[in-house]
Length: 331
Image 1 (cartoon, rainbow, N blue to C red):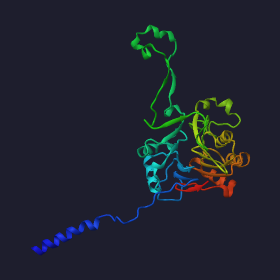
Image 2 (cartoon, rainbow, N blue to C red; image 1 turned 120 degrees about the vertical axis):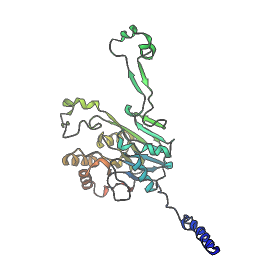
Image 3 (spheres, rainbow, N blue to C red; image 1 turned 90 degrees about the horizontal axis):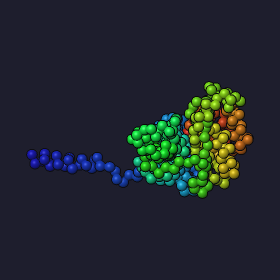
Image 4 (cartoon, rainbow, N blue to C red; image 1 turned 135 degrees about the vertical axis):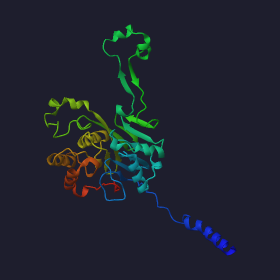
């Protein structure tokens, strides 16, 4: 009996040794966000099968020491999964830029704010997502107000022209809503544009859009303005421009960047939004980027589209950079 008891105790004492973690093992190194690089964190195409593909866009870069997250994808869960698999430390992020208010570019912010709640976020001045909203509730026959008891009058009879201080989509986040292009760090500029035509999907080419007749026949499209932010980084080679979806038109964003920075454009990275366009339209646009606007290199992603990937690669040759999910390119 004594022998059996001793044998049992010996076996029991060995159990912790067999299941305890190997404290001498080396953990996987964190991903180093190197100066002058851009890494795609969220997209629907790529080589790395360990990452989750989804429709949306996000990338991360380091510029003069500042770590910048540009957009954050459709799903906070997938954004979290990809970021963690890549070894990205979101606590290192200094600046966040959200290109526009579509869900496939901003929902990962919910996860980011759990990790880095005080990070500075720049967002287009889009009334649907948080900035103060001027409003006029006067209505018709303004004098009728005086015939009502005070408890039926807005603000107890006060002004009916006011500003609504809404909290926005991300309550208590450190967000600035940007109306006009501005430099936010030396050499780092936010470029503001707005889309009258493609922004809310009401005036796509081949649907309601008629080249040369748009202004006369499709005035209703003017009511679908979608503000966008792009990011321009000044380098020795020229501006590196990161775009989210280019609803404004990639050519208009580049023209605006040239005007705002008074510098050439070396690289355009991100979604060119050419899915709606046919072959000839894309060829014309690619030649315009290369020849008229003197864009040296392109790294298209997200909503650029298969046809445009092919045509841009043909047009730019070795100056076409592959920018799929998980890829890091240097600028």
